[in-house]
Image (tube, rainbow, N blue to C red; front, side, top):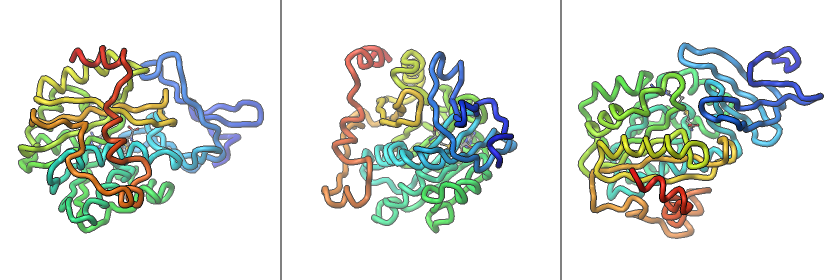
Length: 304
Ligand code: SAM
């Protein structure tokens, strides 16, 4: 695609350079994360969302859905590892896992490590847009590698609808969705937490990306925790460093019904050598520290 003639509301020419700027007055009022574009790899409007993939000069290939950066080759492992290994390691014996969304397949890549390790037995992934999976196999192949794995049951349908209809119970449910604008809107409501509750096995753990962090909109985040707390007995919040998410962090809401469990403590750990072989971001120490909040954020979020 010729950059000089390419038009997209978030792509601009600055001198002889082209830049993508994540501008969203609702999600990121008054601030914007930018990446210099080297080349546009793909742009389309799928039945569900606007999909843009470009090669950046500093973060490798980048996936953007509805104008919001979803992952970059350089830092995707931080988010993928944390959203996967936190609930898996906070569960005593996670066998059956459900992923809602997850079309970039990074969470699948991380889950397969626990299949190889003999812990996880089956993974169901429910992604609404198969175009995301197809494009990622081509443009971010280090992420989209395991959707055909024998332990993976891939369903192309609406995750909300799937949860309404399923009678199965899962040990871990990971909501790796896009942000509330677009097909993921319903995931940020109390009714969604209720659907998760219905599909959760007794010792089960759920985790979801919160689409916000303490710097962007702490009150929204507190509201999300209130919604989760109305449904689950034990709710907590943690965060990961993500330079390519506006303001450099992403928050995750994690919950269970087991009030004796401290989600910030891994129930199972690997020795240091194995940790280093398996992970680039996650470790038992990172697990614990991800729940530690700055003083003001702890004060605000503590009131949920
Ligand atoms: N890490 C990301 C981020 O920036 O928050 C999210 C990654 S992306 C894999 C999110 C996926 O959720 C997309 O592939 C999108 O198609 C999918 N998705 C959105 N709404 C959905 C729905 N209602 N049911 C299932 N999948 C959905």
